[in-house]
Length: 410
Image (tube, rainbow, N blue to C red; front, top):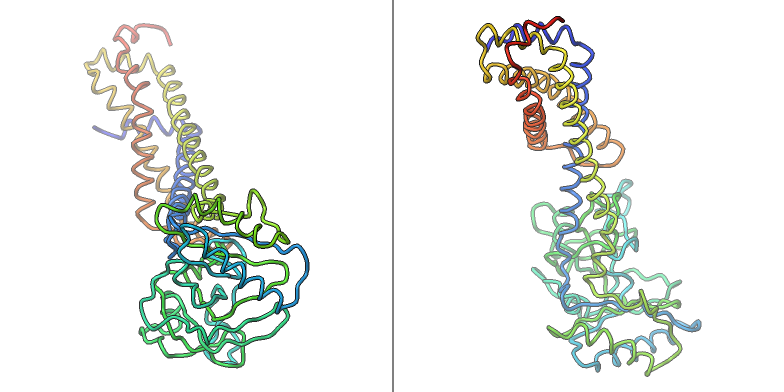
């Protein structure tokens, strides 16, 4: 088809042509980046935690009064013994935090004590010799803590661990050649910490946007925290015993000592609920972005339909003349489809530039990753198909204009 007449017609409708082209460009830029953000959020929600999630739950135990460090440690030992007697419980460990908890403890990591800028940041888990087995974390190199290595520490006591178990992402960050086992690092301390074990996956406690560059980087030190306000008990059950153990555990703790508080709503959480709460904002963001994409695509399609219908109404006599001169239904249909395709192509060219410009701004201000080219290509295909689909109905009506329209006065 000769596009010269089409281009000539578009030059006579500059305002409408530019409006639709810019609408397509803006939609492409927002849809591409929104789909990328949705994919990232969904990927975060599906990240493995390293935990045996189907059989693990967490108890937040708050003490009813202030205890000394030794009294707190004694009560923790009593609680651990009590929980291990609950039917269906496989193991228990006290902890200062757990994966996907939100917020929590983290340490800047350096390779030398006098290093000014940190090498990375690691989530800091204080756990005993039961920590890895209770969570179900898989040790892939080295060994677990020995009971004699576990130290007890009060909230105001300073204690520098000499050994640690680290996650594989942290080990690879510190020693990219894969030789972290037996090597040392510094975690805001003047003394080195030696890596005695490496676990496959152990996700961070913090899941906020700022910690995304450090995803999966965690360390476990052999410290049993005696926190005067309370403690987290991580409980692993035998397969199929999770629900029953979650009901029985708080009752057993209260029976052992009633001087405690376990919130009825948030005090006992399955790890499935921990994950759901951790990524609630990501889920909401994905839904919101999805709605924005659908609305923008609908508005763009409506704009194309409206403008083309308006043009068809203006050109009925011209269409009638073409029909009288022998133009077929297919010729008229192809004319409007081609016209819209040219507008859409102009829009997507501008939209590609806007897409990468918007992504560059997001990368700078929100630590978002660079937009892959596949999302832009996918967005172009979606917009072109949407444009052709939207213009089809008014173009079909134009193709049905009878030749007699040519004889009617303008």
